[in-house]
Length: 60
Image (cartoon, rainbow, N blue to C red):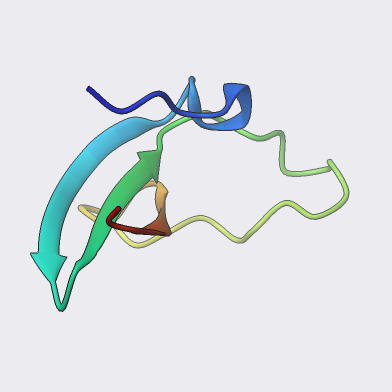
């Protein structure tokens, strides 16, 4: 079990891999952001919705 910070709670898990003692977990942000909101990204091409965010954690 891995406990994630609240900021990642709304993101969807997209994958994980363990390499060189590091666990890399990727997430997809499927939330809709209004186009007029500051920091909004341009719409992604069809089939590529959402952005992927990654967080690495050193294995103990």
